Length: 326
Image (cartoon, rainbow, N blue to C red; front, side, top):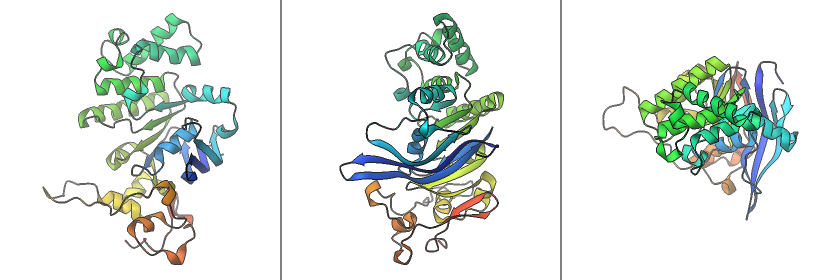
């Protein structure tokens, strides 16, 4: 465990029990989150980003979800071997989670105040009154207007942006060392998205926490992250500091993602680039290069998994000769 890293994920393997047997959704994934930094986890739907995040906090669907190997070290402690009670203390107390869909994360039959106050009661052992006051202060910190009134509202009374702020309040209530933000701006309009991201950035600076930001949006990655981890089909294919990745993307999949982003120079009504094919299903993954599999490249000469090597300081790459020139 490096002294500069809050979290280290080493060769994590996560599988799901299905009618076809155990299928790997996360295949030997490794990355690090330094203290006080934001690491972006990017890739298309089905690449294993959310499964990786839920593996860290022990929220895999049960009984099908299983972690078969690897290490998840948080402040030097391996979370895969801690007790259930200790995991409950870490989750919500030391690691906060901003879930992808606020309406699914919030209980529709309980008032906002009760749900936020419950975090303080569980993790801080506060009285009802103290927890209620702390929850009200947390809503005010999240710049929710009239927080005393909002405490009495139900989730359906709030707009999408306000619900997302409440979900952030739940994640940050105990001032955790690490926040996992799983697509925190999904389904929000651009203006509200910018407000939420600015709010997260300011709170991170004030609290000194680290952030794992999961998103499809490379524009968000460029604006908010210090380092980027690119996942494809359950594997990390490239990781680098954010400026290095955008200036010198080396994996064919990373370059394809960047090509699909419209720029200011893109002519009006022009066709945007799309990556051919789709991400293979869990039961269809090849052991070799999975991006070659998607593109239909004959990778029969290299059925072994491509090596993952450091190509320049801090820049790691899954090296496949078959698709590297694309």
